[in-house]
Image (cartoon, rainbow, N blue to C red; front, side, top):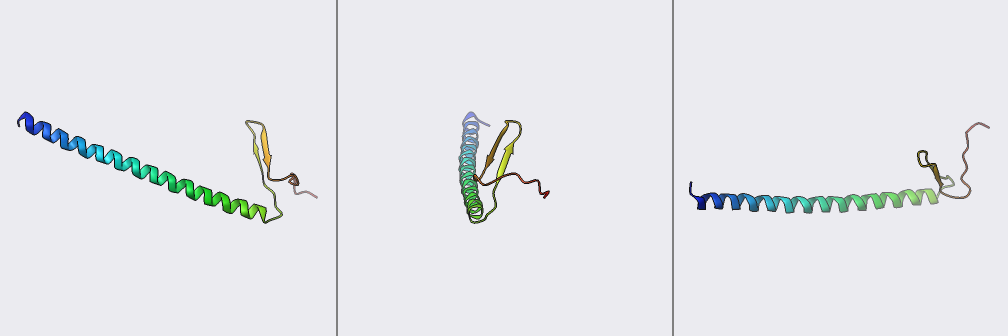
Length: 81
């Protein structure tokens, strides 16, 4: 096999690899965009459901010692009356 053939084969494989890399990056970016859109829609549905109910939501991030609640009326209720 001559050096011209070797160079041609290398160039063909290099170009094919480059095309696959670009295609992979495009697919990944497209997938990330769809995932962000789906997350946004899900968050909007969750907020709408929360706002239309009388229920509250709270979250406690124990390691950081932080808590969050959805409104001033939300309080912890042990369920024992």
